[in-house]
Image (cartoon, rainbow, N blue to C red; front, side, top):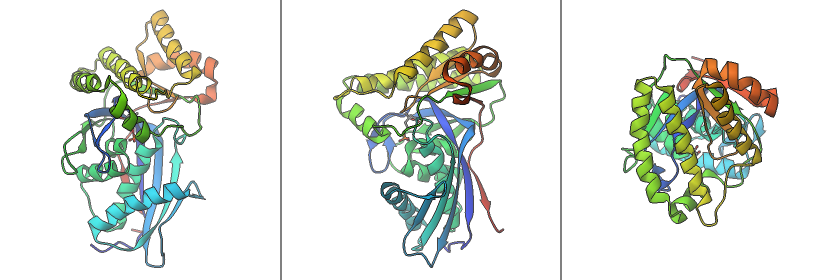
Length: 333
Ligand code: PMV
């Protein structure tokens, strides 16, 4: 393959897992223990540009205009090595990334980040990957990134090896009145990475085998709910799946949690408002303290939004909807 010598820019959106990925079967290939399913979000995304440049002696990576930390450089360089190997290219790359996501606060910037990087780097290296193969490549950077290749509802099939572990679309443009609220409770980097948290949960939680079984049931049931546009069923599955995932961290050794005090307060406010006003909105939480709420857009807007804003500050409550899959642009076509 001949690299394009062209700067290629890709945009990918984050996703929230409704049926979660929590545990690897293969650490280095990132093969998960279970299938998972998510909704890609409109408001949170990453834009990444890549150019392979013969003048560079090492990869140069910037995040929001600042040179990446040593650890991030290494991780992304290793990912670029996968692209170079696939394309049979040895040139180093200049990578610029702009995040429109509160980084590492459980709003999954790694999902949009690696989906965008996989798309931009593979195209810049001269590859023209299908979305199926792009999801497999993005998976190697961060498991959840595989699903961000697609818009709307997307699933990640667990598989058993590199070729059979990929994401696929379930409903890329859901045509019902869905909304997602993100409540930002803490923007600082999480103390226990998802990699470490998963590893510890798989290795030490006595609940792990039960999680696998329950997750399989959720994965099947939520697809029925999505097809039927049944928000109540979708929401109930989403809530219990999230709580069960977090039960794995609490039951690990040593036990830990991604929740903080505000996380519990936000959960309580969702439940209380729902009980009082009868609206349809349901919470979920990833590997950080922030709370995301999926529901009917009108119910979210009229019932939950004012209460959340009053409690957590208007600037910390964001309302968005389903978003698109990854897109690629050549800067000088
Ligand atoms: O892909 P990672 O390593 O960022 O892990 C994602 C883990 C969760 O966000 C908690 C669940 C998921 O399926 O996205």
